[in-house]
Length: 216
Image (tube, rainbow, N blue to C red):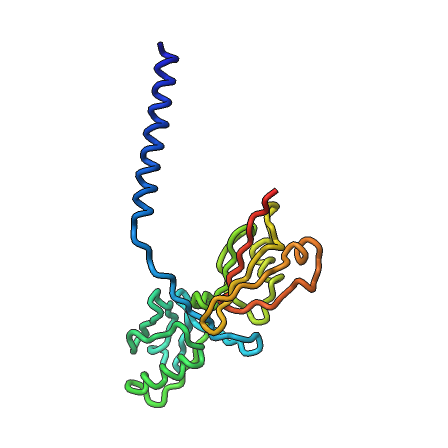
């Protein structure tokens, strides 16, 4: 009887699991869908005109010459703004450090005579539109900060290369061109496993690399 009761309990558990799965599955299918994500193209369309843009999470060392009380290190908030000792809610994200320095000089002129501001970035994160994201069968899939003249090989070194299950020659690169997402094929097996340098390509800020799993 104990063995029979165990079998009955097992089938009851399976039945309940199937019912719950069907319930949640049907509920999800009946939910309204969200609109497609807004495309935010990078300002860098060519590797020769790259300029670093400040993003949320960056630490900015802001120095006002001759006015240490107006200087300090500030972290860009998730909303892309900073608040300094004298100026509140300044939009920093999406701007170059030099451009932001000139804006701060204009706003600080209310409190400081002829202010001279210099800004250095201590923690490079950058806005999402300027990051390179690697998804799928990389050893360490992640979003990485773009660096000048970055190539596919540089990106793959940073994410630890391909996994043993990767179908690298069917990988795709998604890039926003004229506010439209375009897909390009990559030959990552040729590059990473065969050392074919011809398969190396330039990477731009905002690129998304998707590496599928191989079907054996």
